[in-house]
Image (cartoon, rainbow, N blue to C red):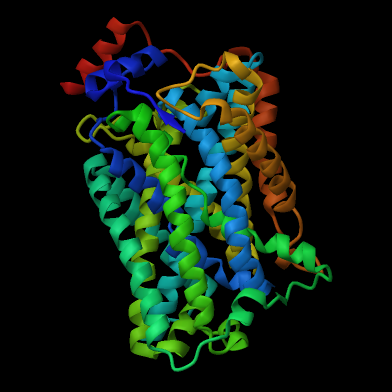
Length: 510
């Protein structure tokens, strides 16, 4: 990876000039540092959210082998995807991100590539927001059950999810500076939190599992007979956790030195999460006292039971609070990234009611309506948990499939462009094509994998409804494209001449 000096585009003025060249006015407030850009993606990845909320799924689906060895395996391919995305981000640092990149890189039929990339990204963003805040609701419900006897039921969890989403949407209406500050805090919360949790789990328990269990125990409670299939299904824990780093791209219109800071945010958030996440998974697995008991916990959250069994109720609840805090930070950042994608996509007329969703609050310079649409969409997607025992795993599968297909389409198109691709100041040089090919093949594989049934026998209450969700949303988007949108959607819109863009910016200052 290479970073070239680009003094002509450094600083806020240079960022605005680059954005004008891409066809957009500087409507959002550009006040985020490179660290804050990294912090958004690192917070959305949130190893204390993804690793722990799907830990019970991992315990049933491959057990320690799938969780511990699946993490670096998936991590390698995620790095490939992230590197490919980062290179494209440097060329096109705009809030539209993936769907904008697809339009610019497609050799022909750019509007169609852009349209479907955007819709894959949209459903993935909504699903990852739902998954993160739903996980936070599960952990919060477990804590309230332990502390106050507030039963961990499906109805109570959905109620808590609604409250959490309202809080996160409200925080995001206050402006990017508040969100940036909280995301900066979140980075240290996650890193210190992992160190505290692992340290306590190493020092306090009288007994630990041996290395042969942590690195070699295979568990299959799925009903499927094939250990290979079960191991592959178990990769969902790692693949779901390592999502959301496209937020660095969506925040580039609010980031200084965006053509370098955005790509660095993508790559660094993945690398730091890979190391810290593996340490967390290994530490937690060594601390398991009663495997079956953790899975059968009345809290509904196996990691909570592992904490309590290993270090006692009081310390266990303290560790649980660390996790809940991280998950709440994560959900807030997810709403931020999701709302920016909705804002950009609606700015180009690709969402029903676009005029409503891309409005900017002049006081806070934030897309307030998009924020609330993101929150409502996430809540709706999580409601099936009321009657489906596997709804959470399905939501995470939707997030993985939607986001990774959207991630890899521009990477694939960049490979097809070959030497015609014009790199930005952050680029991969001759490694761009090989990285892109590996990333594309991997995403094609997981697209099929996470559409498949996760338990056997396949019944309505245990159905993986990922294919149904995509059929409904993308089927609707495809129908809209065929009947209408292909006649008027020309891809990302240019807002005007440099003079007109300057006028838009002056109007926001009034």
